[in-house]
Amino acid sequence: MPSFCFRPRRPDEDYDAYEQAFIRAWNSFCSRRRLNPYPAQSTGDRYLDARNASTEYAARPRWGVLRHTLGRLARQLRQRLTPGPHSPR
Image 1: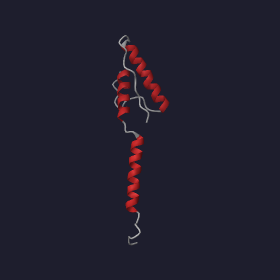
Image 2: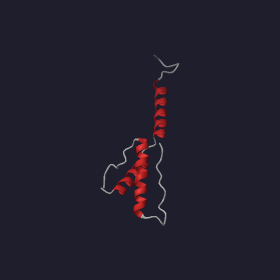
Image 3: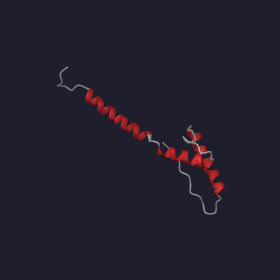
Image 4: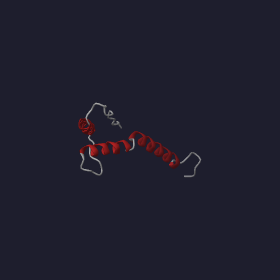
């Protein structure tokens, strides 16, 4: 799963310009990956909503790790359910 990381605000940069750049970057990131750019609970502030949604996105489980874990558990279950050569049938 790709991660979203936005640059820190520069000392000479206006807060409003930084917020607008963050919102544009987050919306672009979401549109490229077909994600919902809005958080589960909206506050009404566009920057705060984008910040909350990006934080929620970062906290989501990594599907590659989850897929690997589920695959390993499925293999272990198959091995336990498969009768061995000396088991009664």
